[in-house]
Length: 328
Ligand code: TRP
Image (tube, rainbow, N blue to C red; front, side, top):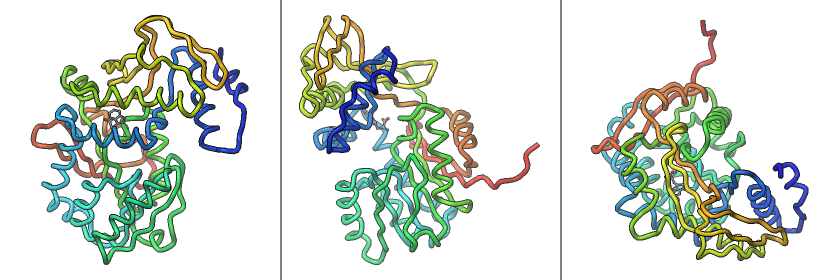
């Protein structure tokens, strides 16, 4: 069945989130291969499991990024003049954002997030840590251009997009987002963006399939959520977590794989998985310097400087909005 047909199955109800979740799941399970958009990972349980992932020994990304942020303050101060509004895409983590804010003397902090609850909590926490700093949280889907609060709109901006979240998008979506960030932030903006690096496949697969099974629980949580919120009957014990490298796309893919043939219902619609068939749930693209620069340039950002952590597993890049000019 084609996705367009599946869309017609959706019954609309009063609850917008539930409706969107149901639409995405019914459409995704009707596709071949099956896929569920990763944004549905992050209910309360999923957000907590993700926090636990960032502390796993195998999951080097968070520690590597934090080490760059704490080691490179003098570089940031040299390259980023005081007085910018820092616009963070996604909820500010309690560790990374303060490292940046304490370093560069910003004039305002504008966290953007689609989840209002998370946003208000992290904004309040930040405001407490930086008493003199105006904090203007904006509840918005940052995949589209966002109108910033007036107090911040007048200031030059520094976009902050940590966590290699750009890597969770396929290339064309990542370029769309970078272009839309440029519209949100203006022609004199800077962007500080985290991007994970291509490395040994075993090391990458371990980072997304840890020994304690936390990432497996995170992945399975989306199926649990479908059962709970969409009247699903997915047999969780017949699915296993798979993290595998796709070399063509230079990405780790997460899947839920059927251990035996299964049938189940979601919102009254029947679906089946053959033995070994998977539901694709997440991508995490990995980069080298050239692929990073190509992606940034395609999105309207010119690289200024690039830093690696001491183990050279992860990178943070400062870029500036490319000036519109005639190119040969
Ligand atoms: N952007 C991070 C990464 O790709 C965070 C992330 C998104 C993640 N989905 C995940 C981490 C699933 C582990 C599992 O690594």
